[in-house]
Amino acid sequence: MIAGVGGQPIDRMVELLAAAAEAAGQAFASTAPRGVSVLGGSRLAQVSVGECWSPVVTEDTGGLLLALEVGEALRFAKYCAGDGAVLSDTLRLPPAAPPDGRPYPGQAEVEPALREVVRTVHLTDFRALAGEAGPEHAYAALLGAASEVRGLDPLKEGWKPGLKAAGATNEELQAFKAGASWAASLKL
Image 1 (cartoon, helix red, strand yellow):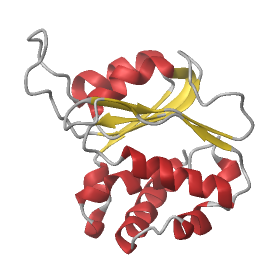
Image 2 (cartoon, rainbow, N blue to C red; image 1 turned 135 degrees about the horizontal axis):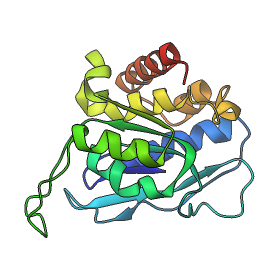
Image 3 (tube, rainbow, N blue to C red; image 1 turned 45 degrees about the horizontal axis):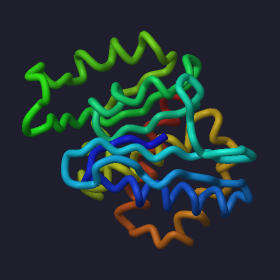
Image 4 (cartoon, rainbow, N blue to C red; image 1 turned 30 degrees about the vertical axis):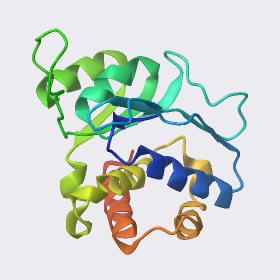
């Protein structure tokens, strides 16, 4: 699953992931990113790689949650299996007008809550990790990190040709490599 808010490049992440799956000869299915696509609205794309009946991920079944915003990681953690993994940017984008007045959670509140339901949780500043590519390419660093997660092994040989086929920019490639190096150092 890929979670974020309106204005974040979830569609591009799905496109790059689909291209990697195709290049690796793996089946790929996804839901269109759902949610409010205007700036700040919650969005979720559900994806399946390999043989599957449906891209729809039901509660407690997803293997990996990629989140571009820390609050969205918490919002959609219920779809991640207990033995799954969450990779999330530490970016915090509180809504302009919270519906109930409660403070919007940050990393300090989200990380322990995620660890209560998901075994593997990694929150990091993917905007900084994107390095010289720029913080706007955090999504590519997040995908790079995902490329090293156990469970996405079938895509291993598809990333490089898939990124090329999808027209990945030099900045996207640079950020992807930075994310992959970070994740490899953690042995995800």
